[in-house]
Image (cartoon, rainbow over all chains, first blue to last red; front, side, top):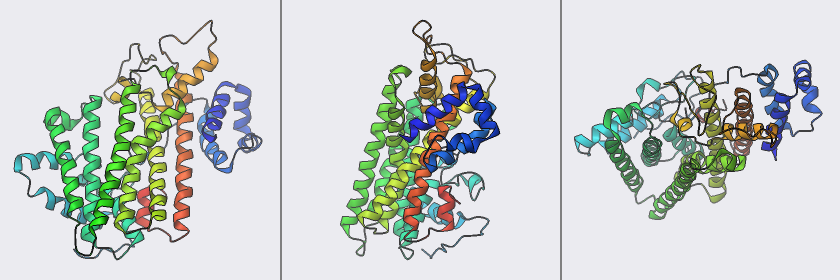
Length: 66
Length: 349
């Protein structure tokens, strides 16, 4: 299930300092070796700037339901 | 009613002509109301993002005023460009009134102190909600014309009632979830509630547009699914943003659930009421993975890191549903590209 893949990947990055450093230096490589679907890989690449900080940057604004 | 140019590409105000038409139509239904009721109903429809909110007309970078009715209208115009504008605008403003009515109910049920509730009080707000629900029925019934068979009116009413009941079920599950602990909630349940609440409402707006245009079952299903996926994506995005803004506030303590929870004026009552939104459930799951039996999570208390992780994962899942909505739009566009205005409204411009 793609939802779980995203959850687990975010959890691993948040709790593994070495993996986070690797994500900063080569995000494509880290995500490519996980064998995610193209859509999940695209989404995770969007999360990379936030995940690599280890903290929340500014989230892009939402559109509906504001 | 005069015809409306559908090609708004490059226009500085891509929705203005449609908003003006919808406002005129909506006003025509409000005019017969008693002035004491009419003023309160009109006031509710002036809230942020609603059709009579003139501050957001043509606003760039934010959702345009009357976005729900615009969605129904633009989908109908996409499927049937020559459609009778009088009847499609009636269906579109019915959707606007339904959503406004449900928003008011939601505010009262959640104990939100919105500016409208402060101004009118909960009793009058509930009465306005009832009036809007009745007006929506009248708007649909007004479509009856010799060239528009009565059976089509029944299809519209049937779709409206079916999807509103789904949304009401989602609301009931959401309210009941407040009495459960976050540990009893699953990610799947959170997404299910989002699908029933926001998903059903956006499905309704899309389906009504397709039905008005006389689309066949297959096309109606395409738009219904598009609405559901977008509704889920936006609801999850909204939940993540609510928690995100809350965490940005220095006055917030790090204890949620049963514990003390200091809230700033910007925070949402959803969080005060211990709503088990997706990022909070994800944060709880993350922390459970780290706590052994020797050191369980104390009283639903979460650390900042866990909540940040919940927001990130939740936002990622909202983007996943957005991707799925984009795939669904691509399927629709394989038949015929949608207008610039509709694409802009959907957030895919």
